[in-house]
Length: 559
Image (tube, rainbow, N blue to C red):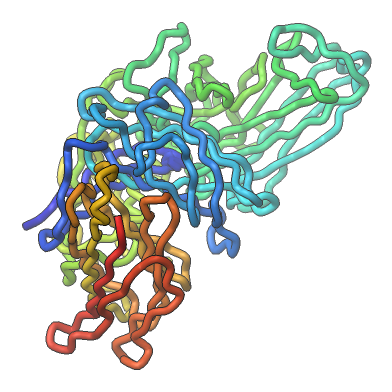
């Protein structure tokens, strides 16, 4: 029986995604044995943290604290039912508390993490279903920015906190970013704090960062591309939030000593160079001179977005540039938008992407991206295995005349499908046939047994997770095992893995610690079919069944 996997266009980089980040939900081939206990927690989530830089050697690892904030923060708990949010080996499992139904009213919260060697990440996550969900949050490694991110730092002299001569801040073409940001601070401008009070000093440190429209860059956009806390130019909340289609973002920080500059006595001229292939979301054509692009600001401390009018596109020295003025410091984003949940002037239209493959067990990790005619990023389903009959549903699509589907194989690092352009707001189904990877795969049948300790104090918890990590690429694939209960639970996961590679099988123990073992699955040399580095798992079977050509694994662990 074919199963549907429902996805949202939520950007985290969540990250979102965020990204964005992005909701990846229940993978449920018909031969899974997975139970769901609706009397415990709902909407189980897996959140993975990943270096935003492609092919980076350093990844988030070890244990680190995650902070959950926002209006719905009290509705989020760990798989153990606590609010002690600790990530392990670059991932954390979360749930909504008992009685919370995100399908009735979406739940939004802010996830913040500071990981050694990485910049602090802050992403908004939106849950609108009881189904399982998976999010990948891209994080920026300190000193190793993702492609498309350019940065400029400069010290500006002041006279008692006042600019005595015109000053300019400009990013340069670097790190894959072909566009630039320019700021002009006019002479006589006073630097003000958040309360509008002058800040005195002889020097001001400044940092300007530009995020272009390439994939690596937009996955780490401050605030993400699908925020819930959004107000229009009149200060009215936009119900249901927004999904941005961006033309670029700049983030500016200024300090005089330890005091943060937040406002100016005079407006500052700003301009962002426009990518030559930038699509105008409202017309479906390339951006041209005279176009107006909606302008938004972000308060990164609260996650609040505010519509600030428009930026006008002009021809500046032969290049299209969006020009505008700013009176306060924040993230500034050039964005068109549509709603995730059917408001903001557009109806909710979903799109099913239906896969036909020659294999029936989940395989690989694919990115399924919806793009504008010239490659602009509209949304994506991240890091998902696929199989025959897999249906990925974009819950909300934009009213744009033309778009196309692009499918990228993260394992082989190749685009494996690109559709012809079509109207996603009128065509609600798209069928795609994906050829098998040139890599050699082997079917794996993994049986798990959760053994009850007969502890009368043991309470039911949300679903457990099994994570299979490719130790060559570091790519993780997760599976929800259904809710654990007072009784013993059993289940089976079927997946295809690359022959000859080392894999780690992990889950989370009831004490909140990782339990795992590492194995080699190689049907070419059965002598290499072994496991080692056991940590809390009792491996009862590891063998190759030549009849059904499947590696069979069986393990148990205590509740």
